[in-house]
Length: 292
Image (tube, rainbow, N blue to C red):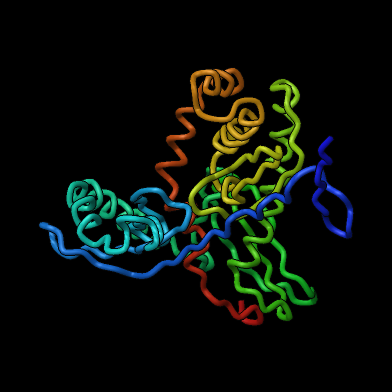
């Protein structure tokens, strides 16, 4: 009778099979590039990813035209310039149209005043007046939402000893409000959907508003708190539904619609306002708290 060989695991313990291979390390590089198209020169960011299988183009709110391709070791991708030029040329009208819209949106956002005193800032879907005040005697800056008859305000009280910029103070406060709002939405919907998350994290993803893993862990962008509550609710339901149905087939969308029949409207709102939400804190202005 043959004897079975047993492989030795960590600390000399016997294991029933070969040790699993560690997951392949993802390698991503980015560099600026340009291409000459019929409409003129177009700049883009070239991203090489070891996990990419083909060419993909995204209009990123922060980076502009983002072209992702496989790594140079993958067959056929050592010299991708001609392929990229053809791909972008076929979509040039679409790309330039959206870049022009992004430029107009950035100009409109800048016209609101950035993060200066008196500027307007979106919170929970509504524009609020930003008021900056000195918080003499306090060691930590604070943010308070104040409702008024004429308009709502976000009051940022800047402590002289707190050297954080206005944007950092606001982001810390917004992250806390986002976590609370997302947790409330999960509590409202998880039981009726018959799911339970293993963990929740609040991040600042640039390419998605939320995600769900097969380990039942959910992640959400804190910027959802800038959007209307219905949009935040839609993303939470979307990710909770993935704990029952992975993929985006009819069964998945039926599950989402069972909790949010108007989900298309709020997904469209997030698409239309993506640049604004991602750029909400980009125009920070340093303020001397002592003189505010």
